[in-house]
Length: 118
Image (cartoon, rainbow, N blue to C red):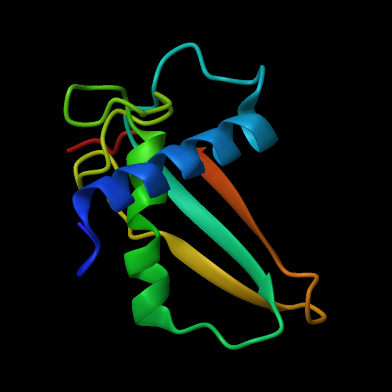
């Protein structure tokens, strides 16, 4: 839960990200099965500087919309099995790029990871 945000507001934010991720990037390119292990890369283009602690906190609703649907997460897109460290062993990698004011955007890339032999 994002600190200070009401549960209903958080659920609305998660639904919004689900619609944005699905409509702009997935539409007809969904995987047949969720990735067992994955890594997320975020490229943020903006005129301002990135505040890292806010960036990672703000990714929570995005991570929640990437996982498999469940009673706890009804808006999941089913791209990743779960957002726990077992299934997403690395924190999201965030890259900051410069952009003219008013022309910023955010791009996401999800990569499947090969299982590591013990």
